[in-house]
Image (tube, rainbow, N blue to C red; front, side, top):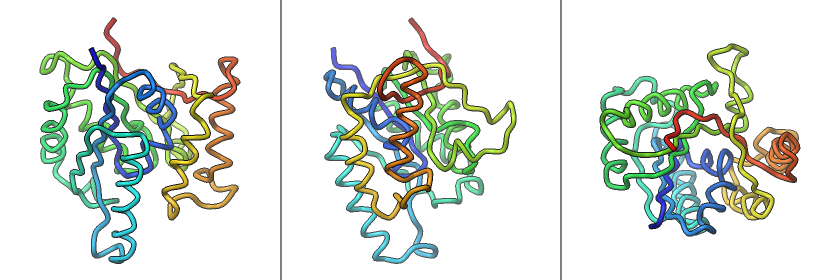
Length: 222
């Protein structure tokens, strides 16, 4: 039976920064990949040219993994903290109940970006175990320039508990990251290709691998 893997991101690029290598590994193992994007750029804050380019980037990334399904929820980028939580929960719930994922990846609860925190909280509400019988695992991922910039606090800390060997997929992950041309600055920015590679190298050395992605285990049923 094909396993269904769902990644829930606040913005396009979160999925590649945080778990792009794991997604590619899942795809190579025959899993189906699904993607929920919570926000989109608004006309008030972004030019028509920028928004058109973002649509093209999402299409290219969808094909690159490849994703079996993509659901864009349409909430305003950088505005989720002023949106009704109930609306976001319901918008996430609909594709989740269609997909019935076996494995879920989601942005980290302690990220400095408020959109990430809201998406995490809404996701956990959707996956209350007494409401659904799946998934068997939920992981949060670290997102460069968001997870690493959160103020030091026990509530914000990303605890690297699970590691995925992405040595065979790191180059492809970085190729996909480059699709987001406007979101990948030059070094030493933490979202630069060099920095993302360095983080994967660092996580790999933690578990005697060449490259790895790290995750925080939210829930697992064996």
